[in-house]
Image (tube, rainbow, N blue to C red; front, side, top):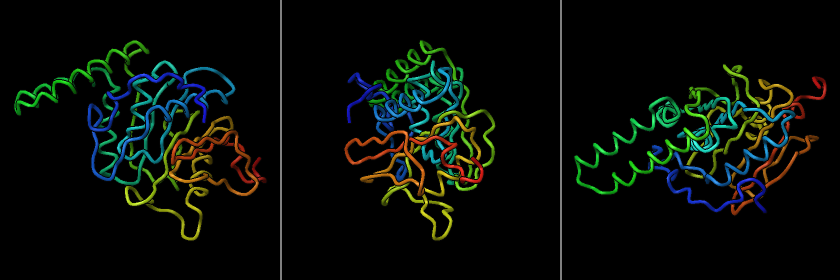
Length: 247
């Protein structure tokens, strides 16, 4: 795939999972450049170019949502993250707290204190990364409203704030697993249909997976398909995921 939006090859290592953003076993990070590319493509399909509400309904540690909030604050109105796993949401809340006023400054102090207590220089390097990310966030417009909540993506409630863009990476392999998928249903199809059901017609969803192709329900056309390495993604409009009788 040729990148159209995340065209630069800038160093994104400050956002590596476990550097400033918190991580935990079983909750892998997400390729930041791919997340940026998907965001650019989703925004290009929205009817208005204005700050968009972003939602990751399978957020895990919140790495994808927090990274986009930090790097693309000017393009986002708020960030919402959800997951059925309370432990994952606990990590996501701490990561999204970096978008709040003073969040990155507090993280820098925490890392510096850990370095002083252990004598390990790596903590000073991580603290410097937090300081750089704080400058990026401030240049984009400053703190960004963000929330992580425990929620079943197959039975989502109405988002607390308007959502225009959904970007999520679905569970795969032994690193993550589905919670609450309807028996006998294709979990990706069920996820898409459920999430689209609480979104406005204009909203655009981007779903990625470690697969050759992310399949859509029968009769639903993709806006775009993307493939990078072992990940595939599909972009689809919420209105196109509604049953024909509702369109």
